[in-house]
Length: 223
Length: 223
DNA sequence: ATTATCTATAGATCTATAGATAATGC
DNA sequence: ATTATCTATAGATCTATAGATAATGC
Image (cartoon, rainbow over all chains, first blue to last red; front, side, top):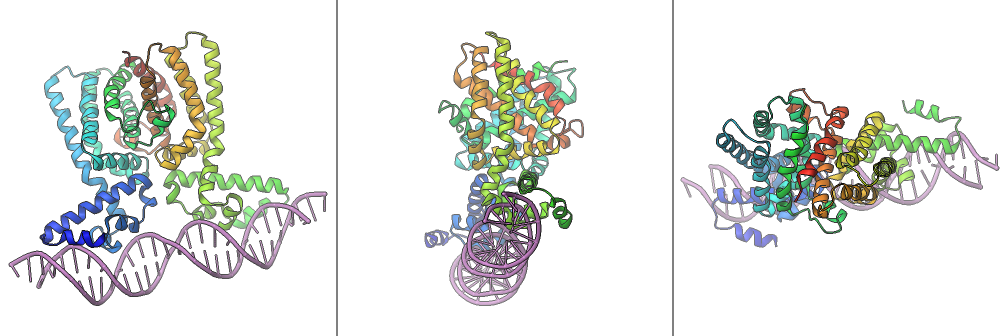
């Protein structure tokens, strides 16, 4: 097994080798962290999953905390950028009359599509980041990588809901992100609770309902 | 410090000593698990916080997984029972015409009050269980302890929303519980994001908005 | 020459068990 | 007598560093 991996590596440039190793390590770490969290995963676990030596992780990523942040960062810029563009496009298109649901669709549907269509890696990242969002380390990374998009969303919601207090808008967002994180986490609880009627992996089912549900929630906060 | 603790223990019956030690251990473990999760806490950490020897944890709780479950279970029955009673009372009071918001208030406000008025221990438990809910171990404990209350809630929502599919009701609940867990977690993210306008600890602010917000969301899922 | 990868290992934990000690119980 | 608590310790990890080996690079 490990020898096959090594064999595959032969005949590539060092830059290619490096890039390939980095990706493989990040994929493995992402998967394991998503299941067991920062402290529930050992560098050994990650190395074993990739089929390399533990110390190579230290070579590429210095230490465990650094690896964790690298996993977080790799896809954070992608989702963040994509949603930012979707929000800007929506804002331009909607002109002076954006709707709450329109803004939320740009924010939520864009992201749900990304995870769902992005394959296993993106689904793992969803679970990883949802789990991280509930921890002190993760919450701070959220601030760094996601504040700009969220503030953009809120600025559009502000236009859609004139007269609303910032407090109402932020609490509304707090509800939205909680629901989104619960979706990305895919714990399987909804499957068991519903006796198999709903499935954690069914992001299309969430997409169909979420923006509408949340938009109505915002509208109900009036006065 | 430890000697003070021991001194305090003197002059009590064994049953009292045992009970007091169990509570102290559970409190310390609850606090630490809420901050760092199952794998981020060592038995040493817990013992050090209580001022006892590590091995006493094994004496009382067998092993770490068992301690974790004991922390989960201690207050789970309380919150679960309280909410079940609130739902039953509401159901009796509302007769054949329950409302979505009424049912959600029985479910959500009852719980938010419990945490907020229950003091530090309950707030810690909230963060503990929110964090646990995002993990495989925790999600299964959720099933065991909370399925009955949740199914009760959904049965009332079914009466309030005739014609709704089970799928809609379960996904709606999925959004509600995500928002609730995000509240209980108190990561401080909303504080930083809002520039100090909102506070993670401000459960009254959540209580004021949540049931109304979520009820409107459910109503918007029609057809 | 440079860099990707592995070997060997130090030092620090961590969990859980066995057995001793010191209280309370009757 | 029973049980709460502590001491001592085995055995298993785990992280990170130092230094060796084996590729690619020019």
